[in-house]
Length: 121
Image 1 (tube, rainbow, N blue to C red):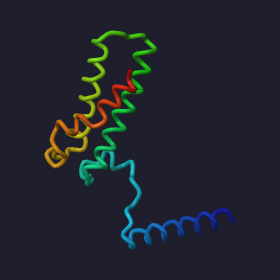
Image 2 (cartoon, one colour; image 1 turned 90 degrees about the vertical axis):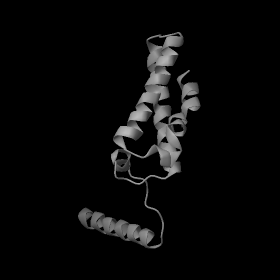
Image 3 (cartoon, rainbow, N blue to C red; image 1 turned 60 degrees about the vertical axis):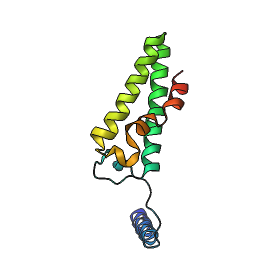
Image 4 (cartoon, helix red, strand yellow; image 1 turned 30 degrees about the vertical axis):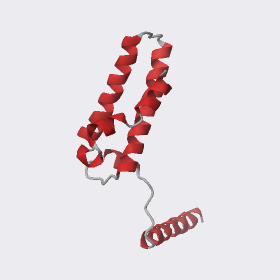
């Protein structure tokens, strides 16, 4: 009985997804796209992803630096360099995008920087 219900639910979900694609609605964001160099990105999507990666790094590094207690300007600079390096490696090496389509390196590297520094502190 459960198998019939789950099969019926799966069929309804597939029909709904097909219906959404036929009406021109966008499909939901997929996590696999985060590591796919062939995926297409628009400027807002890539900006959001870079922003949230940087926020996660700010939170993680802030908690680690605070727990150890690492204080001083050198640790602040290390966080900024580490965060910027990870963001650069992500969009240049993992996604392999042409940065000029998104405003150049400066625009991509600045995405979420100041918010992540606040979160880090």
